[in-house]
Image (cartoon, rainbow, N blue to C red; front, side):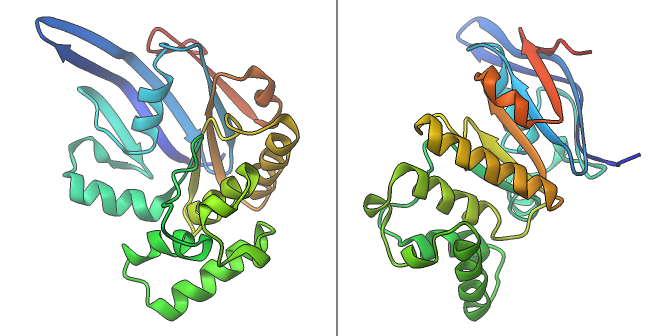
Length: 225
């Protein structure tokens, strides 16, 4: 049986607003295995974004535990969390989150800078990744010179730059037309076939056909449990 890559155990996230406590997650349990393609779905306000933050080690729980490859990250400092996150998880966002003043090549190279990879190696890896996503001819272009689909391809190349175990995609087709969205989903499916663990957070139930496992979230809980 495949081993767990990310595991949430009885995770609560409670936000305090003035005198009111608002639970975004209320005992969330999720177990994501190595090599899975998981879709996390739920309506607006269900706790999807907070769940994504936990899976992506972008936040720590109010109570409960989050394991990344058997290490409990819920007690780590932000600097340690950032190091682990940078190596283990690649992020793909709905709004692409490319730096507008950097070329496609420089955007892909950026995460490797924080892992102290030498410049020559960063250049080689970034060029190869842009070729892999079909953008070998666009390496010198700024995000403003790229279409939405091309921006998302750059974002996928950037997500792969540190060769992470997990790709976390937040509404990856949300800003794309249906044809381009389908191309991006096929690309994610291909990465999964190559061995990457894919976790996709979406409200679009049509995208669940690409996943091997679907987790439904409602009122801050995994209602599959």
